[in-house]
Length: 270
Image 1 (cartoon, one colour):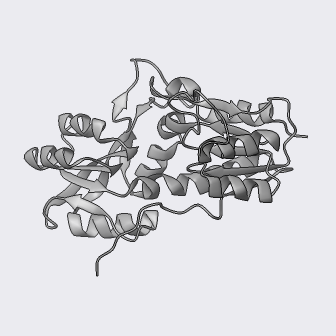
Image 2: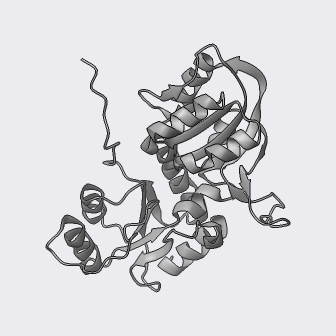
């Protein structure tokens, strides 16, 4: 029978923890390594609703992309919704593992998946790791991805394609819809810190999940198209994909993505 330790061993080979950003908190955050696992659920963020789903479906391991313990909890009590959620998980022996930025940067991780789904060619890390550092297949490792389209298209066509790929109701952007798109940088989630890397590498377009107002001004000043998919939309497709990858590895377990998780943000336009 599969154990939490077995799942961790696979996850840490797929998305090595040393790929995580230095500020991150990845790994097993709740639970026992020797616990047996029959059901695994993946999610983007472990909220009370998602935790309730895990308990209702008798899940033994939740793989939550975002760490449920991030800034260092000083107390876990029933005085807060997060505390009650964690107590419920602990009392029901549900383990929680978070790959977060190690999954973002993995050889076949979120940014690689996004870049490939956008049709980019000659994909390499946007911010490479130390020289000579490579994955099992010899691929260069690092944060974000950069590549090129087979041929240039205008920004309007590119935005239309992105909406379809990530199943987003809308995307935000900075730039003229007639602008050319060919050399594209990608960094999922909240990753405006990589805009300068995209500019330095001569990209005409930078795609991320979310960014601040001043990042849009910086992109405009550098004549770079900035595309914001939404934090949820930029990462959620990979959560479903991760469930499929885990299912292929642990065929005896029932593995699925959360069915109740939704984007916490909506748009009102009336």
